[in-house]
Length: 234
Image (cartoon, rainbow, N blue to C red; front, side):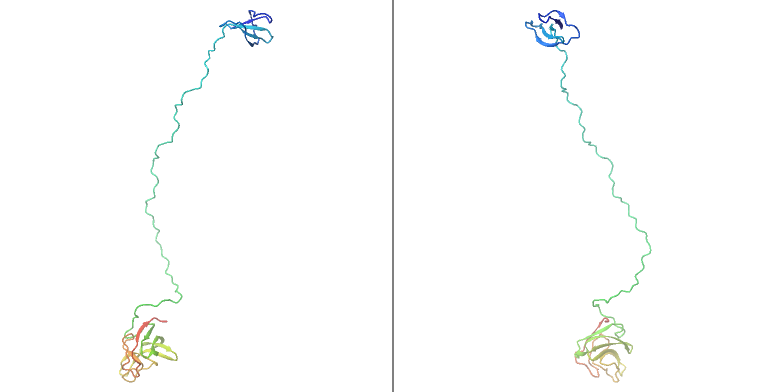
């Protein structure tokens, strides 16, 4: 627009504003025609000016807020499937330890007394009780001879002598021969062979665990005759 100077105490003059002046806007002059406003202003020296002419319309387009929508796709979780076979348990056959010399068989002798009663029938020698630890005599009518007979360390007629102490009397189970040269196992309170055709003692039997009898005895025991069974050594 044109910058027109006026005198401080008169109407607007038509002089041009000198260059380098700073104008201060004071408002529109009274009676300015429409479309051609006169603007009152004064510079830094105090002089008044009138600005005539149509104010230019701004041509700069205001800056707007962008309305574009982002087109990039956010990162997603990978959907690829892992490849490769997981490690499995080895299928190789385990290697066995090498063979070697086994430890020697222990040679120590066990200690302590075995417990429990052995079962089974003891084995006799030829017509004897040889090799047995002892014998149980039971059921005899002469009750004093009933008991366990164990080896006393002696032999008679080639067979072990078994003894049983009952109070002050010791009874013997031994292999006896009579005057007729007959042999039998006998139960007696002494160890002796018969000088007659009978046997000394209370009871006799051909085999130590056979059927005993009180017959053919010099001083027979009371019936019934006992039963004799093998027992282990004490």
